[in-house]
Amino acid sequence: MPRVILSSPDQKALLRLEPDPEGQWWRLRHAPTADHPGWWASFGARTPVELIAAVLDTLTDPNASHAPATAPLEPLRQAGWNWLPNTRVAPDGFAEVEHFTDHGSNSWFITAALGEDREDQLWQARFDGNTPSHLITAFAEALSDPAPLARDPLRLPPGVRQHSRVSAEQRPLDTVAFALERRITDLAARHTSATTRSPAPRPPHLPKPRRTR
Image (cartoon, rainbow, N blue to C red; front, side, top):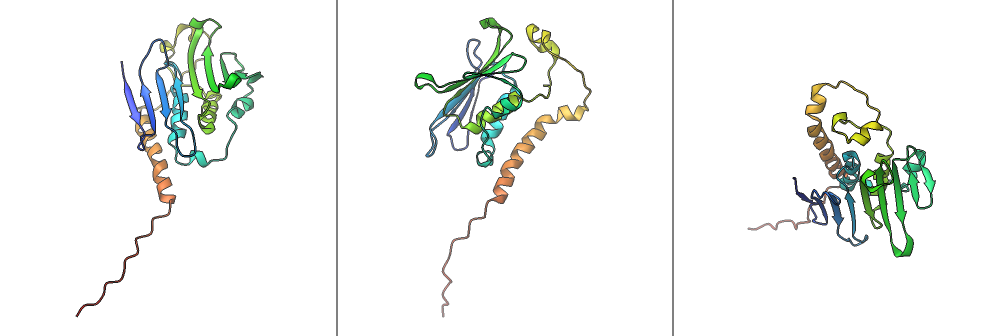
């Protein structure tokens, strides 16, 4: 079973993958900074990778925190999710977002399940209340995105297959074979463009050399 630990260049963020049949597989922790308290997020084993990637892509985007702020739940409202006290339920009823703020607590629970029993739960994502709002917004946008996910139907849990709409589509081989390389290139380009836009530091002022006889 894979066990992976990734740390940010400044050593403030730590992403840990530790497969645990009874708990969350992905755990992200960020140390406090001068202007923001520490926070954490975690994702269950079957959390769609597109949702985790949305959070991590936003976290590592040098421009994301400067973009116009969007309320974390606004993408769900625009997608027609049902609004209940402290809870937002997907139109198909299979996913819900809960924000607990009672008795001093502050945390987010996003759950996908086929029924109310524990064994019907597919996955759960959790966010600490101090998680930057633009990261939760990114997760909500990916969660409410109507675009289909690329999956092998035979690898889906039996219960999920019964509630899925499957369509086949042929893709050129190179779009699959080089998908990872293109993704890495695109992500690296964000940092390159951010560095290019930053003003170059001025060279230090040096005194003119004196003439000698």
